[in-house]
Length: 316
Image (cartoon, rainbow, N blue to C red; front, side, top):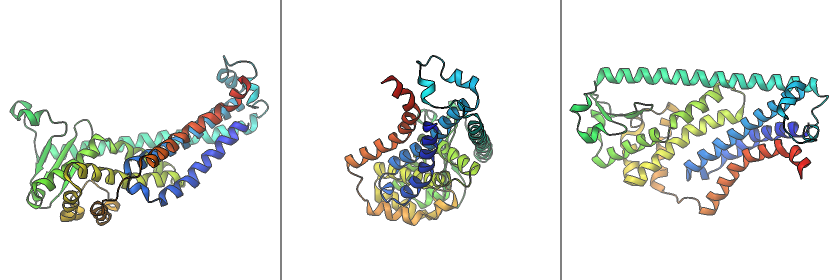
């Protein structure tokens, strides 16, 4: 039972202590892509702790299942986990963890279905407002574009992206009038970064976990941080291609209306994003980036090693 208790303790620490410290750190603003990796690995480690705990708890609760789990294992491996005679405690733990797993799956399925319906509705609206021409009538370069550009008649200066299999970049005539060519290119690069990095997938998973478990701090922090970090990562992509000043000017000129696909809490952060682009703080040193990458990968690896430790101890 030591492995099971250790996994539960590790999951508790990763779900409580780690998110609060990471959310207070300042370095993610300088390395948003790395910060996204760290947050993802943290959540993966928490979920892995739950899955492995469910596996061991089920093995403790059901002797028949225990025989299946340890079938083919060398002699002494099953005994090393100390699961025999723990049926009562195992049933309780397995029931709680299984309920959490089922609720997670349902929340994720509900969020994906809702997001797909919303994207389908927005695509249908876009087609009605700006019907697509047949591919044979389009310029060859535009027909081969991964994310075709659609221009809508609207005096409000806006630009956004519609992710999915039929991804589109949308700008209004107001944006075309408001922005210079370089600023418009920076805005489109920002939105293209969202589409190509599949930020909508990450946002959906984060939203599903936070909605399904509103009382779990790591999931709500993950959702909030993802919403901020994907914008910073897209800003950096645009800045690398078109310059920090150009990207900042585009964001400042249109303020909250440039990136209209952002939720309101991200739109309110536009001034901070402009300041960040203009300050141009350097990236973390390579050693620091490597250290954070290894630390992120170590979290799920540690959970796997804890689960395998009793069995490995009998072999070596």
